[in-house]
Length: 438
Image (cartoon, rainbow, N blue to C red):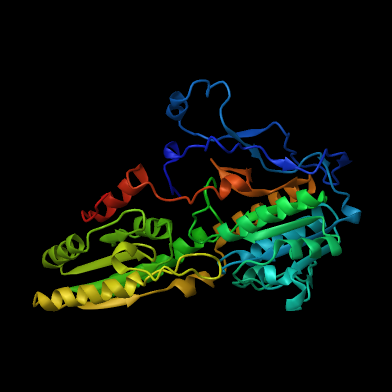
């Protein structure tokens, strides 16, 4: 699934692609008869040769990600190792799959016996909340992938980094796997900094979780594929409703606070969509309403897909932030519903509008087959990275390969659709809309 134009993405000069480690690996891996990855294997950052012509010397020393995968030698002694897993932020498809894959890899690939799940996000690492850690074994995670959500629970909001590292130190945790989005990654970076300050030997490995698919320098995050697939159901329903009435309008609001990847990909998966509105492409309300009217006059029905973060300059937010630090958005779905109805009432044109918001239904569904495979390999590669003492990193996916991405790089920006790129051009080709200010 194409989600961005890679040639437009640049590596910030202030950040490199190197991965931190706790020390040299001297313990032979217990894994046998598998394909090991060499430490010097790399994945090219740019897939387009044209991108290398803009910088002198780039062809001789091109930017590359470290390739993920099992190594012949590891840093931690599995017989003495304890690991922790925490899930943070909103739920999305695949969380249980990742937990299960991580536990099974630690147990079956490396023989690690002590794996603990911290309950309700980072609250589970703060003693005053009294969330007893859950012991995770192959038996306890055997069938959790069949359910949506996370067996560990989750929460939003920052917690004291020093207190949480105290808990890791007290429990003798060697590797902490953090599963979450941008806020979780920033906290993981804070863990790494505090651990380094204390000169502890604790590895912090992140697994990217954002249903919006907006983590930078990662092609795709788990749950996104399922979200797009499930969005098709809502769009299909909106199309049927629109066809069932004269001047019928189906309006579907999908996830996407700062990036419209779900809305855009769902639009491409459903050629019935006539207008796709995303945060990256500001639009004129007057131009949109006029184009919608022209569409109804011409075809007597229309389907609109809008990402939740689109049109915020029109809606007007409160300026407040939620517990995770995200800005609180105005409800663009209800805003458009009201504006559309008012516009056509003023024009003396009768319309029938059906508004559908499937967000929480999509978030809570189990992962589909594609995401389940993706989650399994993310979990495995996170374990392989952690066992070699790599830290302050997130497991990525780039150009069809699993990679190691420094957390400082991953949190340096938000990945968004390029409104002048080929991907967005494909969306405009599909819808035929001409309403933007970009």
